[in-house]
Amino acid sequence: MPIATPEVYNEMLDRAKAGKFAYPAINVTSSQTLHAALRGFAEAESDGIIQISTGGAEFLGGQYSKDMVTGAVALAEFAHIVAAKYDITVALHTDHCPKDKLDGYVRPLLDISAERVARGENPLFQSHMWDGSAETLADNLAIGQELLAKAAAAKIILEVEITPTGGEEDGVSHEINDELYTTVDDAIRTAEALGLGEKGRYLLAASFGNVHGVYKPGNVVLRPELLKDLQAGVAAKFGKADPFDFVFHGGSGSTAEEIATALENGVVKMNLDTDTQYAFTRPVVDHMFRNYDGVLKVDGEVGKKSTYDPRTWGKLAEAGMAVRVTEACAALRSTGTKLK
Image 1 (tube, one colour):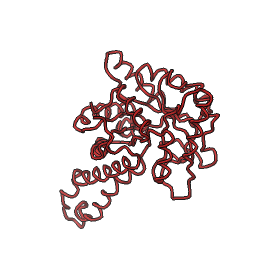
Image 2 (cartoon, rainbow, N blue to C red):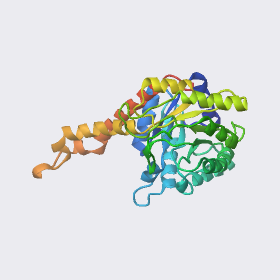
Image 3 (cartoon, rainbow, N blue to C red):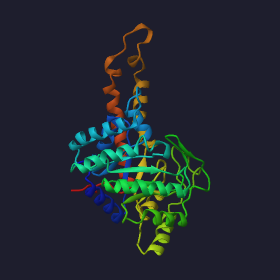
Image 4 (cartoon, helix red, strand yellow):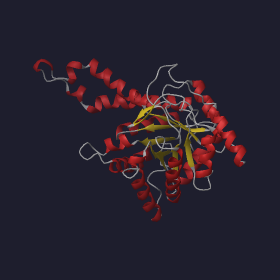
């Protein structure tokens, strides 16, 4: 059962919360990056999460039509087949989807899974993300209520981002400033609107200074201890200890101390994209530089087929990304925790 059923996905998240570890959520954009992520999880003996952003889905849909739903469905179906060869369990997730792309991405995918569940099958994806961080909190949560009801009916978990993450990802951008910190009031309003599980399970991407992309030390002030305040504030009002399952966005470049604090305060999922992109591309660049006169037909020569064959440098790219995934598992304490 390499692709988690809804029941198993819930078990995965519960185990992470209780064990104070988190699953790396690896963005993929191709069959090759999918294999790299699966390989990394398998080598770390860790379960994990595979995710596709709107931009990734558009890329997967092909540059002729750029259809996001086609791209996401195609890779998800592919994953259901090839993941069977890996001795780990993964959940399929869609990453950041803003309001203007809901009708072209998340809502159709929810409908596809609802149809599957009605036939007695499992949903195609195990979770979807609604990124309403560019909206007012009131509008964000109103849409969240609608999507949570549809997700719960299809046995899917919803991820919500209630306040901005800095930087830019797939066209959604926010300044790096003091607004990148979720307040206890924001968390309470979220619990009031979405419940604490009784309306359907959701993951919460709260902001504690997170920034997407690459940044040097000192440019971003992460405050993962803030998550403890959010848990405590909502617990005091609703009487449920540690009510939230948090997601760590903008995880690339974070320190071991920042990650450890986030894990202690309820983070069960951390997104990785920037670091794994670099880990995938770096070996390719090295190969091209070392084999310049083989990959190119220089001065009228014929080059060397074995060096420009995409399989040659593609294997190096897969291996490089897989190593970065194993490193993420170690940092998030998920190494060796796979379901037996």
